[in-house]
Image (cartoon, rainbow, N blue to C red; front, side):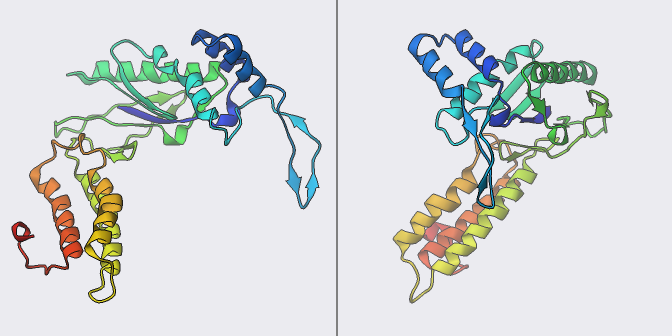
Length: 264
């Protein structure tokens, strides 16, 4: 798998290129001209120590803070996956991109991923954008215990390899045991559970209803984040989160550590 953070800030969007892509997307008529007027002839000035600079024209970018800008940004990068080679899978979420290729042999996988990286670099150059080299990494997923050596190149630089990449908040590992993700998830949940304990004083603390809401709103989403991806994890790993959940239950009910779960 090749994971990369696309360094595509809103202020780098090529306006004429965006307007072209809007037309290609079928946006025409009044909507198109409204968006065109929205993007063109925008000016800005800089204020420093109470002094304003002369106004200057913004030649690129979409307005930051506008509710329309994220949608326009997505339209601008929406054709990126079309540049990838055939049979290469991808996930593009805002400016987070991952591409992967499944093969019994390492050679074809490296060839496809290198071709994918080259295509993304060319696409970004064509549309006035760039890729964050420091956050571009490669990972080999395999059940084999043999250490495989491979190399992907970002122009003249070697793409660093990571055994535990993170994508969209999910910490992967090269053998897909999900242990690293579960341990990180448990660490976050334990911090929030400690806050629950501070709220649960025996004489002055929050009642069961409030503590249940804290668990449902803060702790449980952390425990269950992306649970559909790590459902295949070993029971010994998933039991780590179950124990944290049980601690939260005891905190809510004010039960002792020795109280059986089935009794609660």
